[in-house]
Amino acid sequence: MKICVCIYDRCRSITNIMLTDLLNDPEVSAEYVIRYPYPRMRIMEKAVKAAYRLGWHFRKWHLAHTLQWSGVDLLVVTNEAMLGFSKKDLRNLKKVQNIKLAALLIDPIKAKYRTAAIANELLPEFDYVLTFDPKDAEEFGFIYTNQLYSSVDMRSTRLEKDLFYIGNIKNRSKLLNALANLAQENRAKVEILLTGNVDDELKSKAGVSALKKSIPYKEMLKMMQQCRCILDITQEMQSGITLRYYEAVVYNKKLLSNNPNIKSLPFYNDRYMKIYHQIEDIDWKWICNGDMPNYCYHDEFSSKHLKSLLEKTVSIQAES
Image 1 (spheres, rainbow, N blue to C red):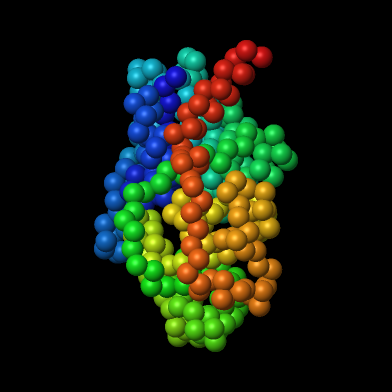
Image 2: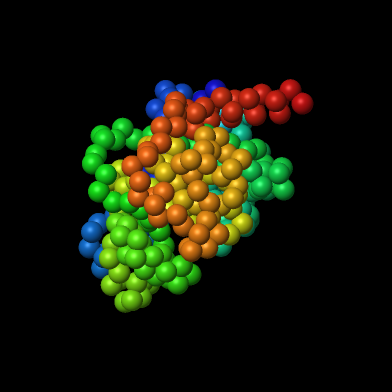
């Protein structure tokens, strides 16, 4: 079965790296809403983004014919890429003979993201819906998959920091201020990288950096490799595997998470994975000690397995 995956951004989307193993399959191709990197000059960025989206607008009308000509059987659209589609677009694609549409959700369906909002609007147009979140799968009848992460070949590096966190500040300022204070009291070295409106008090803390722009994912992984433990702050209403969980298992790091659902996930090990409910719960001696995990991971989360799941899903529906 030939599959085409539609991804939002060719150069900046983490989805590209997550799905690398799937996209390396010779029977899998890719379409990108935005094909080219944005210029570094911020004054031009909005205009160039608009131009790329206009280019996508003109490409969409012949996408259906391209898929048919190339013999594609299934078009998979990530919820990020749905930002480039309308209901009319998807209905036009479905008119192509024998082509099916599958939605791939990498965000919780109830999250307060544009990518979740557009997914809620467009999901009725899809033949299949796959999600990384088991609760969403159970509640809405979606197909659950945890096979969404392609590992990056990383060289081993010297451990220089104890705790690593990267994310948007959102409503986490109070929590992260308390974390930075406790880290200093316990002589722990932290690497906290934040986007968004970071207050001056938090920026003044040791190990805290306010980012003016996002860091490329591979560069972030290099920084993470220098740390013993990854901090996971799971958003509300999410029960599925987060990127931080994937990274801990794949790259053999300790994981400190506020998500109690990790206990039911593959590779959970209470020796190397701890759950906190409040910042005061954190065991800093455990974070800083030299006892490092080896989860014996062998590509179980790899997106290369996603093709088999998609083929099975299409086959089952065809037989019913």
